[in-house]
Length: 143
Image 1 (cartoon, helix red, strand yellow):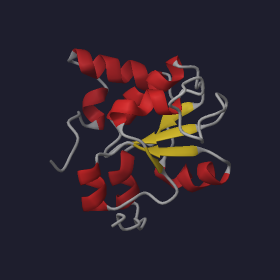
Image 2: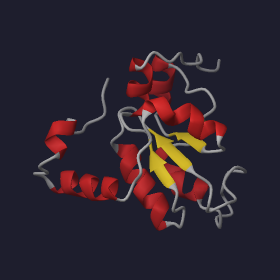
Image 3: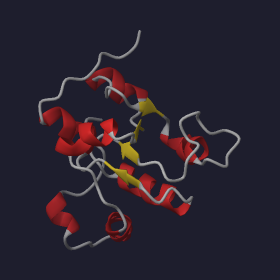
Image 4: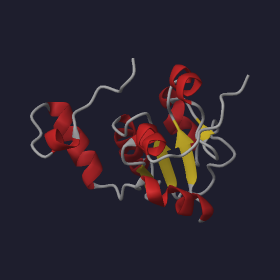
């Protein structure tokens, strides 16, 4: 599958399905990061989390500087109170930027992270595909 399932940006202006409304509500609480601002966010200490499945990372490459966390364990790995957290997840005040393939599931994930107390959690608008389209060069997948 080349793309994540999700509406176009124009379709989000008038949500018609329940998931469209949930996505719009999630995004209303996010200060989404634009592709051109990602490097500055990383330089300022943001934790960038790539939730794309392994097949997409193998096909399209890795996002330099991102930590890979499978979507199905994201909350456990980023909750600073979880015994299963990753070493980078110790501060609820740290900026967390979730990246998926096209910026849909990452919005829902970031909203969930905010519910866990990571109030600065957000996502990358347009996801990894927008980052690629902006001319950035991915890292090759690990062997």
